[in-house]
Image (cartoon, rainbow, N blue to C red):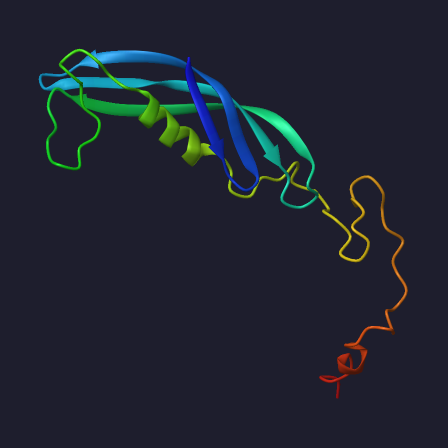
Length: 142
Protein backbone atom coordinates (compact mmCIF):
# COMPACT_ATOMS: atom_id res chain seq x y z
CA UNK A 1 0.00 0.00 0.00
CA UNK A 2 1.23 3.43 -0.94
CA UNK A 3 -0.49 6.51 0.54
CA UNK A 4 -1.32 9.16 -2.09
CA UNK A 5 -2.82 12.62 -2.02
CA UNK A 6 -3.60 14.10 -5.41
CA UNK A 7 -5.99 16.98 -6.00
CA UNK A 8 -6.92 18.24 -9.45
CA UNK A 9 -9.82 20.52 -10.36
CA UNK A 10 -12.40 17.76 -10.90
CA UNK A 11 -10.55 14.67 -9.64
CA UNK A 12 -8.91 13.68 -6.38
CA UNK A 13 -7.21 10.73 -4.72
CA UNK A 14 -6.80 10.65 -0.97
CA UNK A 15 -5.95 7.26 0.42
CA UNK A 16 -3.96 4.12 -0.04
CA UNK A 17 -3.09 2.71 -3.44
CA UNK A 18 -2.89 -1.05 -3.80
CA UNK A 19 -0.02 -2.15 -6.06
CA UNK A 20 0.28 -5.56 -7.73
CA UNK A 21 3.88 -5.75 -8.84
CA UNK A 22 6.31 -7.98 -10.75
CA UNK A 23 10.05 -7.38 -10.64
CA UNK A 24 12.45 -8.50 -13.34
CA UNK A 25 16.21 -8.37 -13.03
CA UNK A 26 18.42 -6.59 -15.57
CA UNK A 27 22.21 -6.54 -15.69
CA UNK A 28 22.27 -2.93 -14.50
CA UNK A 29 18.97 -2.66 -12.62
CA UNK A 30 15.41 -3.88 -12.11
CA UNK A 31 12.19 -3.44 -14.10
CA UNK A 32 9.10 -2.93 -11.96
CA UNK A 33 5.88 -3.67 -13.87
CA UNK A 34 2.46 -3.72 -12.30
CA UNK A 35 -0.99 -2.30 -11.76
CA UNK A 36 -1.96 0.30 -9.18
CA UNK A 37 -5.58 0.18 -7.98
CA UNK A 38 -6.98 3.37 -6.47
CA UNK A 39 -10.31 4.96 -5.55
CA UNK A 40 -10.71 8.34 -7.27
CA UNK A 41 -13.33 10.95 -6.38
CA UNK A 42 -14.55 12.59 -9.58
CA UNK A 43 -16.81 15.57 -10.25
CA UNK A 44 -18.70 15.84 -13.55
CA UNK A 45 -17.55 18.77 -15.64
CA UNK A 46 -21.10 19.30 -16.99
CA UNK A 47 -23.52 18.75 -14.09
CA UNK A 48 -21.17 18.86 -11.05
CA UNK A 49 -22.36 15.47 -9.71
CA UNK A 50 -19.69 13.61 -7.74
CA UNK A 51 -18.94 9.90 -7.69
CA UNK A 52 -16.19 7.47 -6.74
CA UNK A 53 -14.56 5.29 -9.37
CA UNK A 54 -11.98 2.54 -9.04
CA UNK A 55 -9.08 3.04 -11.43
CA UNK A 56 -6.61 0.34 -12.41
CA UNK A 57 -3.46 2.05 -13.64
CA UNK A 58 -0.75 0.00 -15.36
CA UNK A 59 2.83 1.17 -14.93
CA UNK A 60 6.36 0.14 -15.81
CA UNK A 61 9.51 1.68 -14.42
CA UNK A 62 13.20 0.83 -14.76
CA UNK A 63 15.33 1.31 -11.66
CA UNK A 64 19.12 1.38 -12.17
CA UNK A 65 21.75 0.43 -9.60
CA UNK A 66 23.37 3.81 -10.18
CA UNK A 67 22.02 6.97 -11.84
CA UNK A 68 22.72 7.16 -15.57
CA UNK A 69 22.81 10.99 -15.57
CA UNK A 70 22.11 13.91 -13.22
CA UNK A 71 18.37 13.91 -14.06
CA UNK A 72 17.89 10.20 -13.35
CA UNK A 73 15.70 9.99 -10.24
CA UNK A 74 14.61 6.34 -10.49
CA UNK A 75 17.47 4.32 -9.10
CA UNK A 76 18.03 1.71 -6.42
CA UNK A 77 19.11 3.44 -3.23
CA UNK A 78 22.07 1.86 -1.44
CA UNK A 79 21.78 -1.09 -3.81
CA UNK A 80 18.80 -2.45 -1.86
CA UNK A 81 15.80 -0.05 -1.79
CA UNK A 82 13.32 0.87 -4.49
CA UNK A 83 10.99 3.80 -3.85
CA UNK A 84 7.84 3.12 -5.90
CA UNK A 85 5.89 6.11 -4.60
CA UNK A 86 7.10 8.68 -7.20
CA UNK A 87 6.45 6.32 -10.13
CA UNK A 88 3.00 5.32 -8.86
CA UNK A 89 2.14 8.93 -8.02
CA UNK A 90 3.04 10.09 -11.54
CA UNK A 91 1.14 7.28 -13.28
CA UNK A 92 -1.99 7.72 -11.15
CA UNK A 93 -1.92 11.49 -11.68
CA UNK A 94 -1.64 11.05 -15.44
CA UNK A 95 -4.51 8.54 -15.47
CA UNK A 96 -6.99 10.88 -13.76
CA UNK A 97 -9.39 12.43 -16.27
CA UNK A 98 -8.94 16.18 -16.75
CA UNK A 99 -12.57 16.62 -17.81
CA UNK A 100 -14.59 13.85 -16.14
CA UNK A 101 -18.16 13.32 -17.34
CA UNK A 102 -20.63 11.25 -15.31
CA UNK A 103 -22.09 9.70 -18.46
CA UNK A 104 -21.70 10.38 -22.21
CA UNK A 105 -25.21 11.85 -22.57
CA UNK A 106 -24.95 14.20 -19.56
CA UNK A 107 -27.02 17.31 -20.29
CA UNK A 108 -25.30 19.54 -17.72
CA UNK A 109 -26.80 22.55 -15.95
CA UNK A 110 -29.30 25.13 -17.17
CA UNK A 111 -27.29 28.28 -17.94
CA UNK A 112 -30.10 30.49 -16.58
CA UNK A 113 -31.30 28.85 -13.36
CA UNK A 114 -28.59 26.25 -12.72
CA UNK A 115 -30.95 23.26 -12.55
CA UNK A 116 -29.46 19.84 -13.27
CA UNK A 117 -30.98 19.02 -16.67
CA UNK A 118 -30.44 15.27 -16.12
CA UNK A 119 -32.82 15.24 -13.15
CA UNK A 120 -35.22 18.13 -13.75
CA UNK A 121 -35.69 19.29 -17.33
CA UNK A 122 -35.97 23.04 -17.39
CA UNK A 123 -39.13 24.41 -19.10
CA UNK A 124 -37.33 27.48 -20.35
CA UNK A 125 -37.17 31.01 -19.06
CA UNK A 126 -38.81 34.26 -20.16
CA UNK A 127 -36.72 36.76 -22.09
CA UNK A 128 -34.62 38.98 -19.87
CA UNK A 129 -35.59 42.48 -20.97
CA UNK A 130 -34.23 44.10 -17.81
CA UNK A 131 -30.68 43.21 -18.76
CA UNK A 132 -28.32 46.15 -19.34
CA UNK A 133 -27.23 44.34 -22.49
CA UNK A 134 -30.74 44.03 -23.96
CA UNK A 135 -30.05 46.98 -26.29
CA UNK A 136 -27.19 45.02 -27.88
CA UNK A 137 -29.38 42.00 -28.65
CA UNK A 138 -30.25 43.12 -32.18
CA UNK A 139 -26.90 44.73 -32.99
CA UNK A 140 -25.78 42.14 -35.56
CA UNK A 141 -29.17 41.43 -37.14
CA UNK A 142 -29.75 42.85 -40.63
